[in-house]
Length: 123
Image (cartoon, rainbow, N blue to C red; front, side):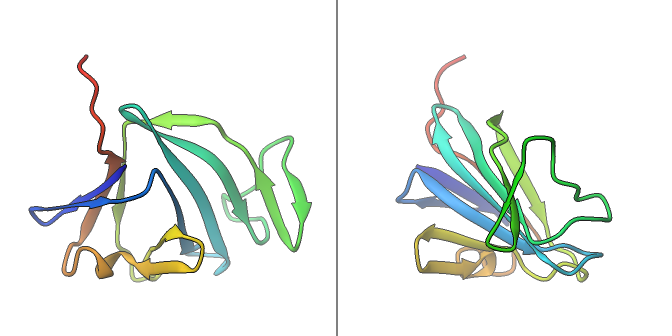
């Protein structure tokens, strides 16, 4: 499962994968990333963006289809901290296809939200 925490609140999403999206602050295009719970880590399995420029150049090996650049980073992280910005609008999180909500749906009033795997293996 994937956990969201912020403002002294913890929400456990009943899913092992999510899609996170937001609007790029300069180019004003949608950026999208897919994460899955992988033990005590989140695994960034897919990323895509509609366009390029202003620090959002697709990496080598990215492919262009359906008006977006797509690539598979395969990066593991322990947590992802999301801070709101007046320039990007609110982050949106999809817990299943067609089940997308702004982060404030789960954590109203939180100015910073941390995503992590709910499963913490002993170190």
